[in-house]
Image (cartoon, rainbow, N blue to C red):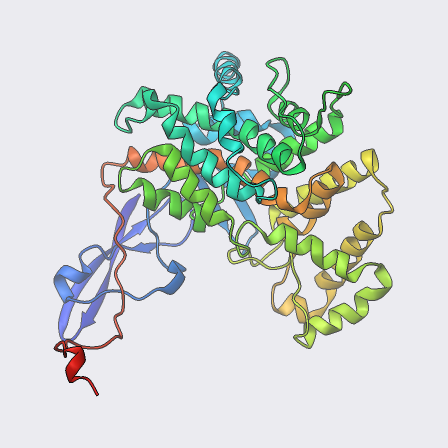
Length: 429
């Protein structure tokens, strides 16, 4: 970060010169940390859409150009050539690992996949019809009650152990949440399987028969995890950072991120996109639905993004995965896939959608892909949380190690009552 210029501002007759910081990529940032002290004024930015809440070296997004970089590497290259665990290492450490470094990292993650035996009793405290995200929120927060030896956030080694435990145990917890919701026995992890293969087996294996993991599904699962690994300072990541700024333990911070992700405007978008495709039903109904969108009768789910004003680079990869998965385990002529493809073409070429920059995002194809793999819609956000855990941890770790870090304390524009005196109940009319 460098400073080359300054922004001059006059507030109520008070002149202030604010430094302008330049990052390696992206827009310049006006440093307003001294604004209140020098002008007695705050900034007002609902949703923080024009506010940089931190300095970060992890993920860069250029929404206008449709660019997503993790530590400088394009998401398309990572999804095509890397693995999820290698991407985890990259996000955590800043560089791709050597063969020796990756072997150690993979072994550490594999050895942490099991849960404490008493932890399984925790799941029976939930009703059988509990939403898997409710289970995830509670279960991840409860990890701090089982792993006391890695809660000191000021100890580098303990932070590393907590990071490994979270990345390793999240698939086990997610699979158990799924198994519990469908009334099937838990399946323990296997050390001879890859990260994604192990997760699929824990979700779909049953004691009555052997389960052979389809390599096409393993590749698709790993790719989906990579696509959701991190996405800059979104709502759940900002929640993790804000919780972490108070000194909360990492398990509590990740549980806070999961709770935020549960919101339908954040992690539930892929479920809504799938429901939209089901509502349309078949290609011949698309024309009427599109007209309904223009008439404000329906919403076009899976299109447009708060950040991307171009084609979401993750959607390109997800579209390929949808084709591969449906070809392997489903019908490549699935009407929902046909609806998705035709709807995409209409939206990309219709002036109404082009003008509004409503391009397909990653949620558009992920719902139909996960459904074909055998996951119910209630598990979609759970899978998102599983993948995003490494991003949350990397962001939390970066925040803890930032010497300028301080507890988050946003301010407000107060529009309530001015000071007034209390009137006893007997004196009120």
